[in-house]
Length: 129
Image (tube, rainbow, N blue to C red):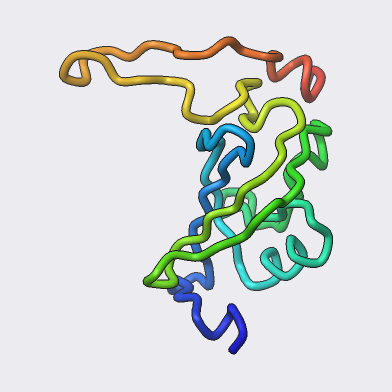
């Protein structure tokens, strides 16, 4: 049985994908995948996603060079979420942090703290736009 027969895509044909650093277990990012992006990820060993905001297919690192090499792709018991373990090159976050989850909520949500060092600014990654 194919993975695509087990996955439960939403009404837009997408499934959420949690991307985790294989070496540390740190969650790096969450993105959306459709069938084509899953197939391309499996074919190339590099992560590919579907951008809901830009309405386009993209490879992680195609602009920044901060690529993800897939070590394992798994799905949960319900078939509605993917877990992709990767070797991350550079920042996973478009804001220049290793992880997109670099802000921790403090107190009762009245404030937050930045919990990791920024590796690069977006201008350093993408140039001035």
